[in-house]
Image (cartoon, rainbow, N blue to C red; front, side, top):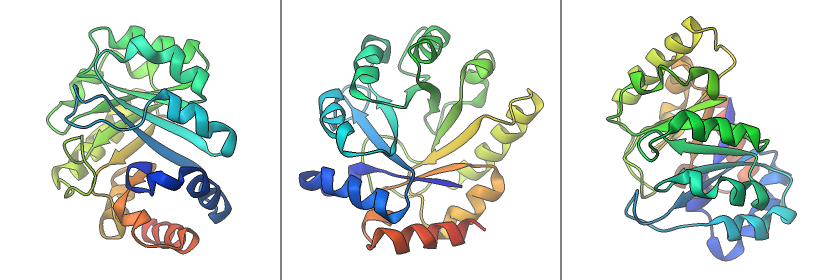
Length: 217
């Protein structure tokens, strides 16, 4: 299990120090929630913030684009230092083209699904994704309650990927992830868990990472 702490819940006035502390604690990934105020009702980080902090961290930058028409900014986020770009299937008309372009630029490509979006929307792009992100809350704000139907959706996605010969494709879950549901999510087939307030609200980071790791077993 990979834990990708969401910086949406971190101290935004000290992000450089936070990234350093995460790395020292043994965290490998960090999750950037990019919101434009259009696709979701909130505005957060942009490519310039990521670019400014990239030199401060050797962490894997897992960048979740909750923006309209993300294809307009793929090169910008590559230049900013993103290691993976995740786009919503609901946000772009040409999903396959967008995913292919992310890979062409040298980044990992992910597709995200809102809670009400069916898995069938991925049927013809399974060969173009390195990861599928299942939203376990409606995107836009941190601190929301986990939606129980997510567990069934993750299990169905795992079966779908395995049947398509994509056992290598990661499944990420984002929203309301905590110590209480981590074990069930991993058992259902999730590989990467995003946690915001349930992680950053309980320092020190090393001990919290250990707690999530233990909960996954």
